[in-house]
Length: 345
Image (cartoon, rainbow, N blue to C red; front, side):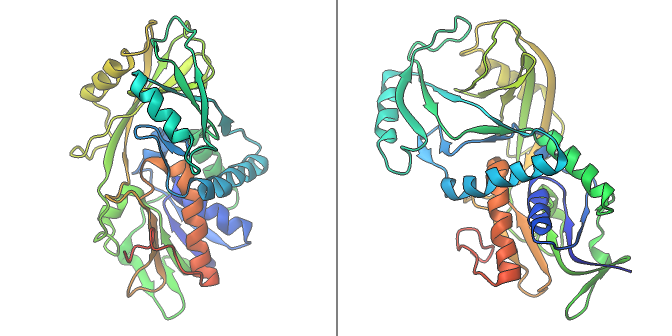
């Protein structure tokens, strides 16, 4: 029987963030992944410290970025890949009133590090932006597909990945350890995204799940190297390709892209993009969202070796490493969890 410190169920953004924290602290682990959840794969991968619909700061944006950026840098160096791309993000203004709201927001202490007071005039004939743009700072894009692919390959090489469905009924609990098939572990971390709804230990938690659809378009004439946030995001990913997203659907819980979603994205995109484009990709996934927009982190009330790391919502790239860091400190160093993320709330 193989002995490890941790079993991690799920190899999306949450699972990888926790695995990386374990690796940095010389802890042994095995990760289970069955590809049933794909919200991390289809995510635009944008990290952005500002909620641009309302011009408000993301919860603990500074703290999240301080942990996330070094985490992805460490992965890049070890796996010899490039996944973190710094980009300029422009918020398109729809009116003079929005410009004024932007100026007011940029004066606030928690937003001033991230919002430039300069209004950028639009000089691209293929973009409709008569009121210009505001610049958002400290923004980047993580290539989530490459991250997950490369990380899984690294796990395989170190014999730390089980590409199979995790069967909850086969958990055998002892006082200090958990036995699962041929593994003996001190702790199990459930980072299974929307799959949590079928987890008998944590399916009582208020995980809603929101379907999101994204497009990949090719627009050779557009030729921009910055992102635009208007009615949708338009994010450059290289070779004249751009990600467009995303939709929000609360009833449909399937991972299948829909014609309705595609038409919604195209309609919104055409409100500001004037050049021709070709749709070359269309994907969907279920975001693990929570009504209060905070992660679900913590220990099962009666099964003390079982923990959850979930509910990263629409900002998994940014909040995942922060939540993983907090859970690790809770387990290993007995540091109390923030009330905002503790599942006891």
